[in-house]
Length: 280
Image 1 (cartoon, rainbow, N blue to C red):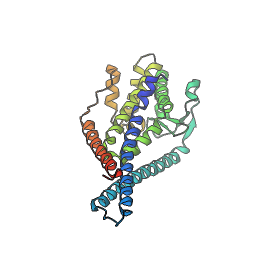
Image 2 (cartoon, one colour; image 1 turned 120 degrees about the vertical axis):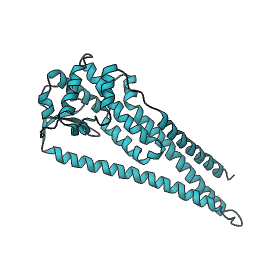
Image 3 (spheres, helix red, strand yellow; image 1 turned 90 degrees about the vertical axis):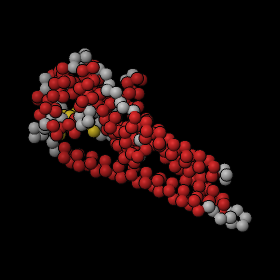
């Protein structure tokens, strides 16, 4: 994978991790600084009284850190429970995809057909070794070219570890939603589908008809299947890309406002931590 493609597939994950590190680092530094100052003031000759507001700041920062890690733990537990339910639901319905697949695909993931009740979808899951399941109803509906588009679309999800990226961004988004990360996650869901469509188009020598055929087969038969194939909130963006080969513009206003407010809060916390750390 070219460096540009790798960056495009991971930019939201890197941005989310960086922003979470900045916020949590600032909260931790401020909390430790306040505690250090309280201990220092308590050890002074004459036991100078610690300013009451310092206890309030320590409480607020400590609660913010506890809330962050609580929500991270809750998100991970929720994801694991969801994966267990899905694995149980699919376990008896999976069978290996018997069609000869290119070696590049078999090295990327394990491929299955899943028996269904008329639903048409394809999904990729698994954190370490990705697995791809394509519903039989969708598979038998598609011609070989459309099947190829689906295969390479899902292969890109597996290659860049989109299931792992999704759970990390979802957990961080829920934990830091008021501070801007809630905007990154839905944008990532759109961009990952467009990136996978690019791979499918390349595999079909730039012909968009197979991919459009697969989209129509998946969405046209059952609108509930959009949650399986990653179309929820992204279908219009994908169709726009197939029509214009341009990624839809991303309105920056809401993100800019949230990140600006968050950056202000981070700077205030860091400043407070430095002042208290130096006992000013």
